[in-house]
Length: 133
Image (cartoon, rainbow, N blue to C red; front, side, top):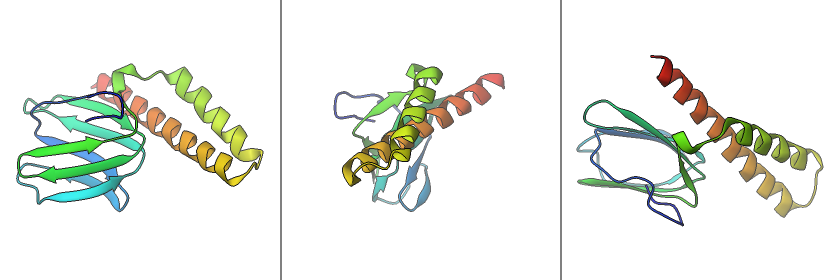
C-alpha cells in the first residue's frame, strides 16, 4: 500500500479486502490479474496468522498480479493512526461546506473530504469491534 508520500504497508498476506468502483473486492491467493479504481474507504489486510490490519485510502488504484497486490492511493493512513475526534470534525466541516452550496469545485472538494471522513469513521468503528473480540 503506497500513498503519494510514502509506503504504508508491505508484507506477505493471506487476503486483501477493498472497495472498488464496482463494489467490494476480496483478493485471495491465485486471484486473476486485475486493475481497478478504488473508492475512498477501508482496506483490510489479513496475514497468514489471521491478524487483521486496517487502512483508509482516499481512493486510488488496485492492481493484482500473480504474486503481488499493489494499492496506489493519493492518501493512505494506518487504522491505528486515525483519530475519532479529528474524523468527526472533518465530517462536520465537509457537511457545512456542502450545505453552503458553493461552486462546483468547492462542492467536489467537500464531497471528497466527507467521503474520506466517513471512511475513517467506518474504519475506526471496525477497529473498535475487532478489539472487543
